[in-house]
Image (tube, rainbow, N blue to C red; front, side, top):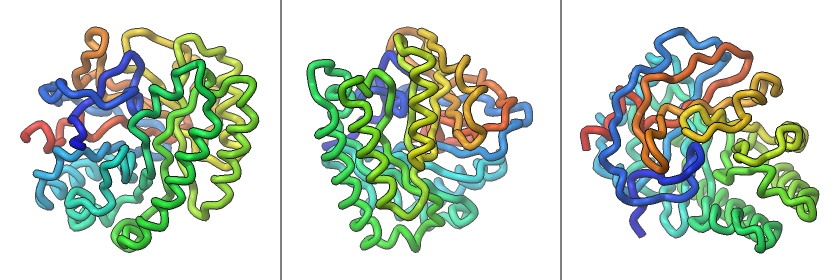
Length: 295
């Protein structure tokens, strides 16, 4: 299966895009990123591996990683090492990233398994979620062993693992919420390194419930990546909530703008972080020094 080059969704990214969708390869990629100094304590940058990126050379990766470092980024989040049946831990993409000299100056969060039907399942209100999430976590456990066999622990300075699953209160239905959180906690405790997990505020989410969800995920040992959702047309309460979150939370700022439903362009209006939180930007593909726009 070939992964298309872009996302299509009514929410923020996917990281906050709900599913991969063909047809947006011609996105515009120019923007000014964080022209003013960022007040957050650390800056991380998301990169979604896609099969179309195999044409990038080691030199391409060196140029954009060096530019990212000069722009103040200190960590890269490789969003997944497997998407559906497509694997990246054994790809030329990951190999070339590791061969770029500037990669040695970054910490890496290495993403694990992302099923290609995740959003369809999680948004189906008639379908139970616990056994599905349990299956996905088991696949991620298997993937950890494979990643070790392929030597990624030696190729990258791995700060932690990243579960590509996105969690929202609408996914944590009352009858399954505690069971799902307990399974996530059990999985987290089985892994030595830090583990990142994304959270988004849905359009109809209860704000107090979202705050409890983030607090519970943090209490269970996860590093929470909270999606600010600044890039989407239909606003939610994320902007209201994130300033009150624990300072150890990563706040994800989107470097794109939804110009109409399901259509996105790079944005030159990336808001400055004036808070104590770590900042994570979505994503490398949109930034002015990105090499993807030339391919």
